[in-house]
Length: 86
Image (tube, rainbow, N blue to C red; front, side, top):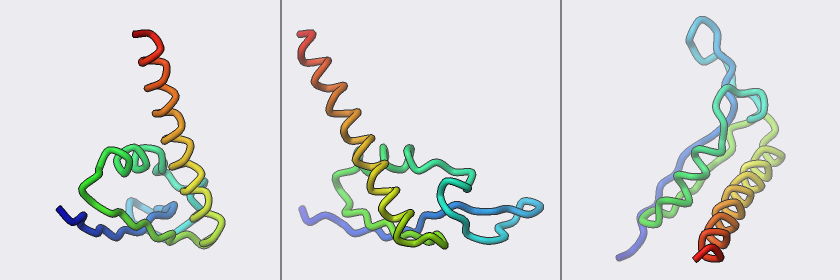
């Protein structure tokens, strides 16, 4: 089966009275990227493309890549520890 494409934007958000005021760098936003990285790694049916909407476009795009790789490495290390206990 051919994988489906899913496009999304991610950035930090500054709120004012519960409404979006502006996009901010990821580190200044109130949403963490780690849970989304977990979801991306769990989902093999979609080819997920994330577009940085941050004012620090290139920096935050690389930051998201670093987080995704960190989450992936943690998963691999956990699987290795589990297999070594068997």
